[in-house]
Image 1: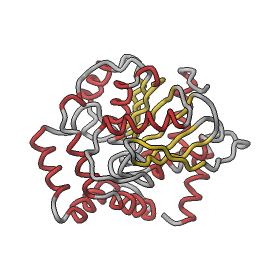
Image 2 (image 1 turned 90 degrees about the horizontal axis):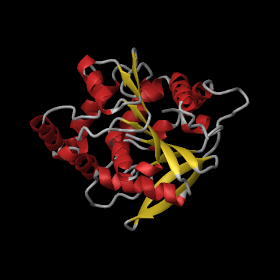
Image 3 (image 1 turned 45 degrees about the vertical axis):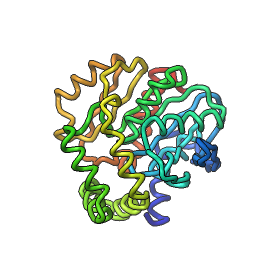
Image 4 (image 1 turned 90 degrees about the vertical axis):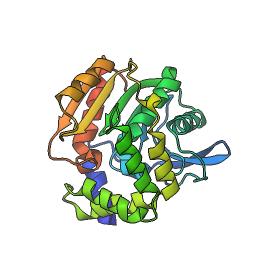
Length: 287
């Protein structure tokens, strides 16, 4: 994305906040997990934080329209999960447990006691796993274009993982990203997304997706904290899926948005930030 495009995103996101709250500049930090660096950026201060978790093959910059603007009012942390962005990328298994432990390592390093976790796409099983492992540290979850059950059957997912391991990974993945971003009108935004996602090493992308084949990740166990779910209208999110989600999330705010792609928080940052703040206010999660 061009510098002008990036500034435009910040301006749009700031519109969701009072005029006197200018976007903040974050502090780049890092901590260690199993000897490897985990990078994060923090804004503001306090023991309770909003923690933004990116999706598959993405990085913390995908929250550029949220973190600086919301950081003007709240304690905000964005994370580069292991293998992504400025974090180290060792040749290991990239599992949801690893990611959950990385989030915990960041919270401990940042001296955050409890968090509202916002997960985009494959960040959803990440924050759900964090909730399973650290329920006492989880105030609420915000699910953005992410699923609480597998996207397809095991055979289909295994075929997809095989494509990620193939020699023509960049070509296959590039076409998939183009399909995901095709509804986005801003060409610079589409290019930014594609460039960032293809920057993630193939072994990381393939390993993470392979880890989602674990059926234990998709157990329909109850989520007993407030949940906001923001989805882009598409056939996958049908009435049966909504009923399923309500069955495992007693306190659910389920929102279906039209005219947006998978990257809803980037396309409509002001609306997204306002929806997030309204959810936090409703559940008294602002402190």
